[in-house]
Image 1 (cartoon, rainbow, N blue to C red):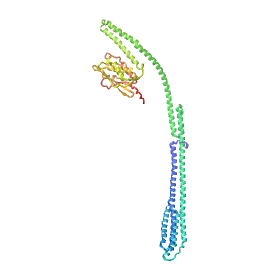
Image 2: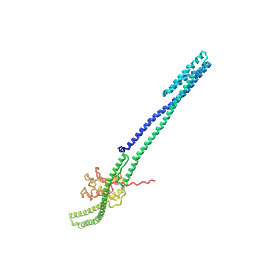
Image 3: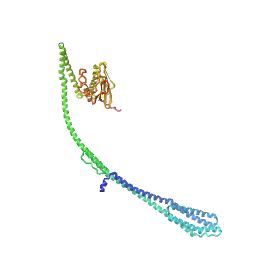
Image 4: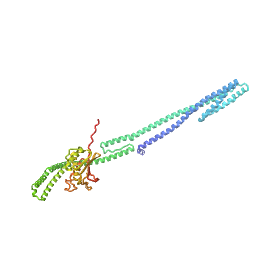
Length: 518
């Protein structure tokens, strides 16, 4: 149970627990190290700031007692007061040094040193009471004094000072031993901290290797097998819970891709079947086009020949027997000639409409500045002297020049045809860039097109006016629309103009030639 529960721990939780345990242990070691350092500093303070000055004070105290003894002997022998000066200096030094030793020992509180200082004071007082003070009194009274007396008291005092020095040295040695011990403890604590850090690092590396590196490598291997085409390969992971969730997500993606791939394969099979069907229909369409071309040939030759004969013989009848026919007969002949001619024009327009896109010379760069003069030249007779056809700077487009010429001939020809009575026609051609295309506008000041006929004007055989009002077959704008769409563009009627007709269409812009770097 505990193993299963542990395996459910995330990598973040495991690393957090590892770092927390390591942190607690290192914190404990840090506290111990801090306490040990404080103890070490205290021992060093005892060595440097306490026992050292106390030892020097003890040595100076011994010298001060020797000065006192020397001063008493000299005074006893000479009787001169000046010889007491070493004694007085020794007394003052004694008081200062004993006070210094007591002050230094106050913080450490060493009982042996405190007892030694008390014993030194007592024996010094005993020596002065038994030896020094009687000698001084005898000399001052003029009585002889024995300087050899009191050696026992001074020897006892000397022994007390030596004991004090021994206890001070013992305190120093104890502090030195404690300092060494604290130093050893600090070294051990540092070693333990280093071992804990190394163990934590090793455990972390093992966790990363077992829960991340190996599972990720295995997961990558499984993914590569799926990428190589084994879409039925189940993707699993034995790593951390995060990687197991990731593996489950990747496996879900694999299952979805496999399902979609099945759909794609089915769709591909359907597409291939449709392609085969389209190929069959394309072959059939090719045969139909050949039949249509044959029909076009027949229409352009065999069908027009009878029409030409009908028109020719009707005209012969009119010339030869015109004086023998009444007005109705003349009218019938005119109807026959006009019908034959209109049928010829209709057949020619149909042939032109059917040939768009079938008979092609390939797209090339066409300069519209070269096309428009040719168009104006072809329409010069229809335009007359009063018509005004103008354009600004025109761009180069990608297309077939003959078809583009036909396009502008039909558009500008319509503008000339549908002029307002008694108003000279004004036709303007302008362009503007629209991404990879050029937008071309042909606008005139003619009679215009009503809004409700905007969708009908580009339909074949759609006429908006009676045949006797305006000539034509009603196929011109249909040819224009087919030419524009063949070039990949679109055409529409601008309904926002207040006067005349405005037609917009798009043509692909000519590619810009690459500039060679020198």
